[in-house]
Length: 78
Image 1 (cartoon, one colour):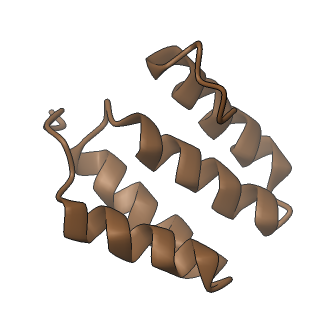
Image 2: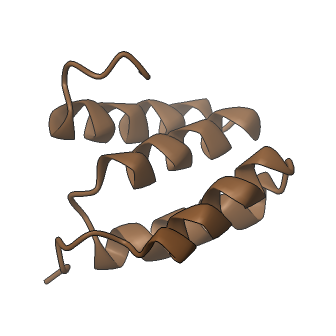
Image 3: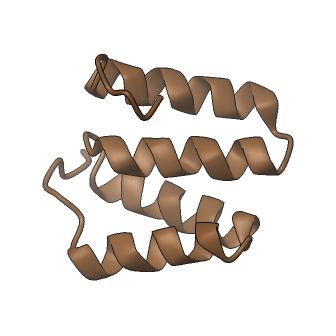
């Protein structure tokens, strides 16, 4: 069962840096690994959806966006 605790600030910083640097495949991999450990963390699902969308993996991105919305339905970021 996945741990639902928060990912560390360093892990989040690394993930966002990959996304911002256009390293979308690496961001996807890291986000998926972190989600496996921290399944209820909104930002992980959000970043994953952005990485997938940027790679034109639209069907997967939609699923990830939906997962993020389940966690934080009123987020203006989505």
